[in-house]
Image (cartoon, rainbow, N blue to C red; front, side, top):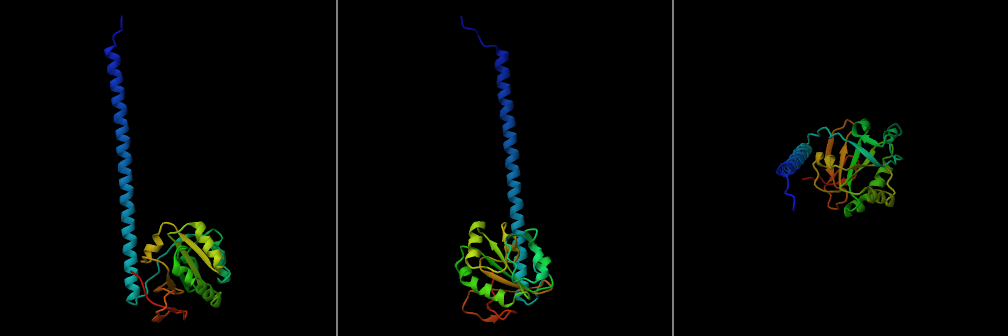
Length: 218
């Protein structure tokens, strides 16, 4: 004779399954809300950074020379041989901020290892850094790149100045950039001047270093 299932036990099992499903649903819903919230925050930050960059480029083009956006980025190439001696200790903690370089003019070059024009201008930048050694701080900022490829690029061109990594792209956006290469001149007081594209041959103006360049930007 086949034993009949206990209705009480069946009801308990069904209730347990329903509770588990309900718990799983609540967890999934919470995760979804968290992800959506995170994406929204990232979108807001991206819009904010883009807005800052757009204003910066507008101000620079109008001749206002605004304060350069600050940054604090990781060092991927700690070569300081062309830097002023008193600034060389800035790389000791493997990070460099713009405020640490105050007191000297700074040439910031945004680049990437996959960028053809970046390769074309690399030797010119190292020559300029050597020419203005200890008087002007040359600084590279690698964007949208892999660390290994970036270091291989720097070794290939025997880069004689420090290069940083902008992994998040926030500094790239803060400076109003849409592509590479792009070079900014920052004066000794931390004021931003026209972005320069050193790789272009149809130059129409001159940077404070006397290196040809043409204003560009979005």
